[in-house]
Image 1 (cartoon, rainbow, N blue to C red):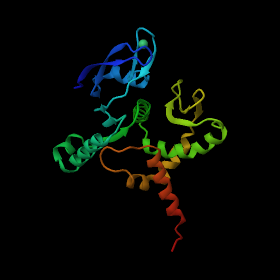
Image 2: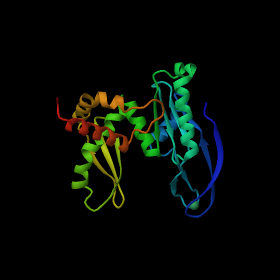
Image 3: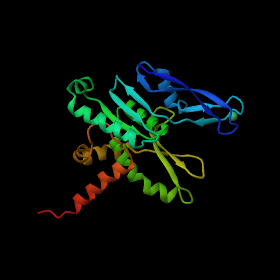
Amino acid sequence: MSEITKQTIACPKCGKMIPIDVWDSIDIPYDIEQKEKVLKNTFFKATCEDCKISFPIAYKCLYNDMEQKFLIWLAPRLEEEEKAEVAEYNEKLKTDNRLRLAQGGYTYRIVRNDNELREKVLIFDEGLDDRYIETMKLVYVPAFKKNIAKDSKILGLYFDKKSSGEGYQWVLIFDNKKPVIADINMDIYEDMKDKLHDLVEEKTGEGFIQISAPWAMDVMTTRMDGMQTPEQ
Ligand SMILES: [Zn+2]
């Protein structure tokens, strides 16, 4: 069951104190309305009644999909104390048979912001594997940098469903211009699954892990290193 704490935060524009609900977890199937808000990117936002602006609110929250069996730890700050908490949980997963049994078949992820959380929920809802989505991003990024991001910095690259409901797209977030949308060729995803399977499994640690750009980079560099080794 989710625990909701009442808090107040100051509007960044006018300073008015705004009451907010802080959820310690979002539990699916119970909190389906909250899931919709996560998908619409409105859950971790507050609105000031006076100046009508909407602004992000970041706090630790656990997204638990009990039906599809995935747990996502939203950790906007991820400081020492929280890292220790993650390590402790992962250790417990290794040793506590009761916990292992209760959460058998679960996938665990750590994300750093609401966009990443939304992306993971979308990916898992589609029955896709986020590990190959992350490695696929590395294939696209050089082309995006060359063709779209000439005078801008790419701040984020997110997997998304097309609004038509058919097929997938990338959403590129920039520092100085509006987001750009680009088609995803899912043949590349299938190709990644074929070619990287063993390595990806090997690089996936137990318990809560961050599957993001640095992780994907590590997979791809290991693969390149492996390919450069001359065969006996
Ligand atoms: Zn305000």
